[in-house]
Length: 610
Image 1 (tube, helix red, strand yellow):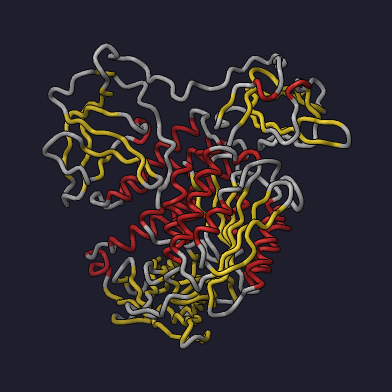
Image 2 (cartoon, helix red, strand yellow):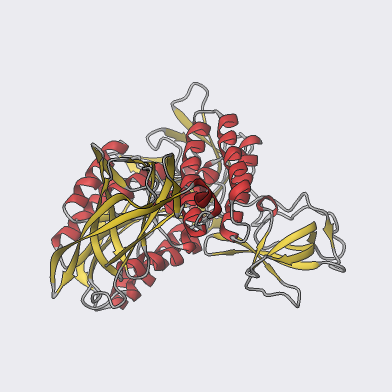
């Protein structure tokens, strides 16, 4: 493995106190070791809230992952609702058709015993655990732990203990109801990864990214020890890695290194420069890691001295900051600001949260490289989030986007994971026209978990990104912009002048039509239906409704809510004639009775078919 460093400032002024960022990249050898065998357990949330599209796409992504595995790899599958169920005991991936057939039998029902499912997966991985294999649990969920062990600290403690025993955990959160703090905490403690799957059909791409990493592990347990020079202090570790300070020395755990992705470490140093010009030491970076050689796990180590040039103040000021280091460290500092903004917003301090973002926007706007589309896009997203918070539209999706972006920036160096998020704004307020005369046609589309705008009109490169207001981005909408101007380096376009929405003739200035039949009708009136469950209208999606399941308790059939955000133990007023054990229902609305203690099903009721 090769290690190299770059400084944000190539020259520091002699006799002064300065701050400098160090960006260290660890790169696996080009040849790399042979592909490691895999020992994976897929732990799939089959609780009621996963019914419909989320579970369908989770299962399809699981099939695609299995297709990527080889005959020497091991796989097990656990499905969980109120309790975990092993649907595939550990076996080698030698009969993919049979494994996929097992997956097709997984249906949704019940509540979310997340910890029980994860523990079952760990047990299966442990049964086939070997040092020369990649041993990992992949947890897929759209909900929160509401059955079994539910305290976050207890869950994360167990995940950390498992990682210490050599079994990592990757978490994948679907939709907007899961607890991202818990899943991010599990991924961090579990030496794995976290992914936010905002749209169900993003699952395949995310699984591809995870599988690419698992198939290209070149080194494990990379640990870096920073020993600063006597006049230098480690002011901060900018990445989201676990680290421990021991006096002036700092130890940082970076985890796995892949042949397909550099592992980066960024630290800020406080330097009291000496009075003598020339090369001066900043710190010594010692690192160690493990790699499989000839079928057995061996430990390796290395050392990298980090130095800087000291010169006059004129020499230091004459040289601009390194663009790459500035871009990478800016992303990491922005990630920290997003986390602080989320913390303030959670406390109800929306003004403080917005101010955090706006202060960062001001700093970036004055210093960023105007030819960097990624940093320009970052500023536009911060502006979008600030406006959403200021207008009191801070919701679960915005929170998850900000937390996901912060996590990915702090742990990965993949562009396809950076700035993911599809909660754009709205095109409704734009002037709607039916002619593109005198303008350029562009369209907003979702690509790999991001909203991107591309040129449609002839004469423009349709592969180029377009700098376009995030607040006006809406998937599937076509626009007319006054003009597109190439960036200075000719790698993307900037939309300039007026922006209008392009519609068909007769719909000028019209609002966007609703999709999917609109949201369920909220009436607050108790549901009244006739006939039995088989007479109910059917649906294959929960949408904005509430999922209810009928369960047997003794000689009684009772209805309970299985959608997240409700207490599954409360009784419910629910039409008796349609109650049938095991059936899942989609109810327009569920309200709590005055005084609490039970629920009432309100509005229309449909039977969920899977």
